[in-house]
Image (tube, rainbow, N blue to C red; front, top):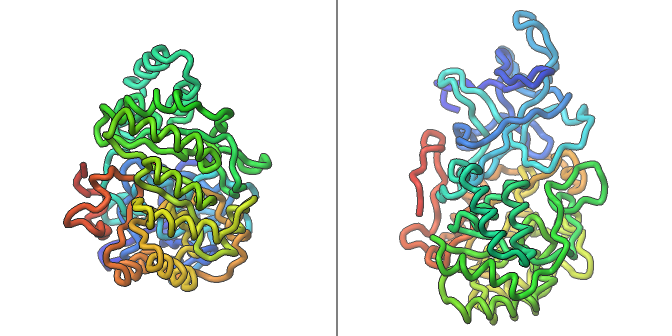
Length: 454
């Protein structure tokens, strides 16, 4: 950081009250290796972000006087000597974390919930929080200020009443009101990107699956869809949205379902019917892309963009996280190639994790895939998982090169590659004059002008 800024470690007491540590400078972690953040890896904490504790896990930082990396489990004597625990940030959408929180991970006693954890500090001179993050998308439609539940509830009741026999509307009402899914809320607000969950089953067994977990160690965020909607049910939800919504997108592949590619025949039939009824709006498909032939049929039916989910372009790491059943990593890569050959706007839903995503072999493999397949955009999504659980599953040692540095290198090697965080309308697949959204610097972050998923 510039000499004029002192970023202190942020800690919490036993009750969860958050404050700066007066003798400890902020550190972050790449993998489980603590280090000093670089200046371009920190921005003012974005509005809408939240702070969490890492329960009973002491913070790690740099001693303000000696400059040495230390673990502190208590406050200094002048502050009462109370016990403390680490604090982290859960970033608002559109921001990618650059470092994990620095903590004494060996002393962590519980499995953390399926959230993404970012390093956070307190700027002494500016009296505000800083987070280890970069902004990767200028779309502000996903900010919490746009999702007022007081206005939402009557809209949900009205729509469900209008389609009393449509199970999908009933499912999406739960997603909007109980799980607070922004995409589901968009449907009832009649705007932007809306979801079309379709599949109750999946052929991956992801470590961080948010709709189905094999054990009680880290509960899923919501219950999974239990039925396959009919073509009529899908069209009753999608067509009105496509016909009338501002910046209309409908997306298959949501957090409350398995993978929609296993229902590709039903989806292809539904997409053909949607396009028979209206040419308006964008139809997107989020998937693990495990069935290449299905990608061909979906493109032929009228799907316009695809977002392929990956945590890694290195097969061993992909398999360790996705734990595929009945398909191979090679099938996913083949699907990416076919998507582009079929004319789809081709995105990666890249589940990034500092210390894994930014390793040299990962960067080389990703760069080769971008070249070979012609990938249009990488959505730099923060992987929501307990850091220790994921790190052990990957079987790695040592830190990465830095996510910001990795992104800069990719852009230098692939000038037309775009970074982002959300799906786009077809009118904005290739925005004129904005082939790459320039990541915000430290001073300008959080003040990006509005432009106009998850």
